[in-house]
Amino acid sequence: MWDTTNPLDFSTGAPQLAIAGHDSLGEQVQKAAAEAKVVKVFNTVGNALMFKPELAGGPPTMFIAGNDEDAKQQTTDMLTNWGWETSDTGSIEGSRYLEAMCLTWVLHGMKSGGWNHAFKLLSK
Image (cartoon, rainbow, N blue to C red; front, top):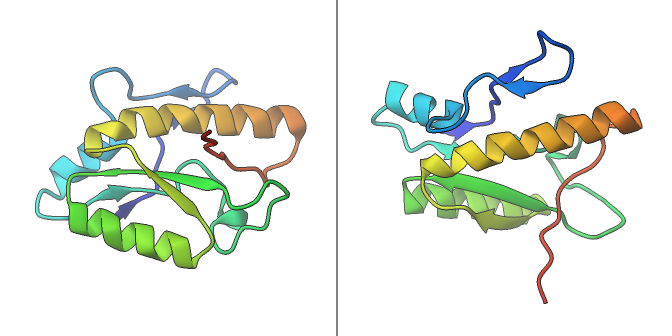
């Protein structure tokens, strides 16, 4: 089960996380669907780039989190087929960090007026 959600609160203008710290919406989804194999994915990019993103910097990086290794591998395989590199942040608790990353993505979009951007993890 993919969790693509973000607990964003725009009530004060600039977005904030409605859930933060020692919890995440990803963890709450996993608790609510305890038998499901939840993978947090696609929460740091807009829908226009989810399938076969074509960006000047090459394939973007999709960050994922989840408790089930098989579900994460299936998600990684699908992401590869769809033109993404994948970075596994570990268990579903990693959703805390992925949901915070979404704020950076949203703020960039608000400032630039464009929403066709994605993260890229670079290594030496």
